[in-house]
Length: 330
Image (cartoon, rainbow, N blue to C red):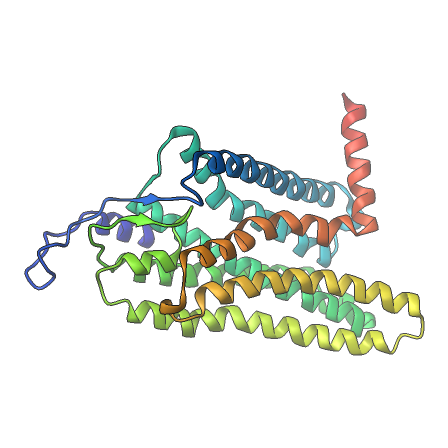
C-alpha cells in the first residue's frame, strides 16, 4: 500500500519552481524505444522473444507440475527448484508480455506508475533469483559434505524459513529502490532506450540529483547481490574439495559436470547484473546495457529448466510419467 500511494502521489507533479528551471515539465508516461527501430528487425525480435517466453513458461510450468504430482520429488532440493521455476515465470512475465503487447498495438508508451511498478517487480524477482541460487548451492553443500546430517539440517521448517526470509528481504530491497526513484523529478525527455523500465536509463532521464540512488545501488544493492554470490562460491569450494576425495573417476566427473552447469548459469546471471548495475553511470552504453539485461531477464530463465532439471533423471522420469498420464486421460 505504501508503494501504491507513493506512486499515485508522484504521478501528479507540482508546477516547476524557478529553482528547478523553466524548461522542466511533468511526465505522466515514458516511451519504451525497444531493441530496434527497424521494422524487419522488430518482426524478427517479436518472434524470437515470443518463442523464448513460451519456452520459459512451458518449461518452468512442467517442472512445477512434475514436482507437485510426484511424491518422490517432495524434497528440499526440488522444493527450492519449484520456487525458482515460479520466480522465473514471474520474472519473464514482468517485461516480455508488455514488449509483445506494445508491438501488436503499435504503442511504445508506459505510464509513470506502471514504469515504477515494473521496476519494483524486476528488483524483487531478481533478488529472489539471487537468493534461491544461493539457497540451492547451500542445499547441495549439505548433501555432499554432510550427507549424514542432511535430514536434520534441511528440515521442512528450515527450508520454508529460507524461502520466506528471501521474499521478505527482496520485497524490502525493491521497495527501497522504487521509493527512491519515485522521489526524483523528470524533464521533458521521456524516451527510454530499452524494452522495459530499468533503473539505469531512468536515472539518466532524471533532472534531480541521483547521487543517493547510485550510492544505494553500489552499497546496499551490492551487499544484497554479492552476499549470496560469496555463499555460492564458498559452497562450491567445499563441494569441490569433497568431490576430489572421491576415489571413483566416474563419480568425480558426474559431480563436476553438475556443478559446472550450475556455475555457468550463476556466472551468466551475476556477470550481466554486475556489468549493468555496479559500474559508474558514465561507463554505461545503451547497447551494452540492453544486451546484458536481455541475458538475465529472458535467456537465463529460459535456460534454467534445461540446466537444472532436464539433466536430472528423477525429474525427467516424473515429467514423462506426468505427460503420459495426461495423454492417456484424454
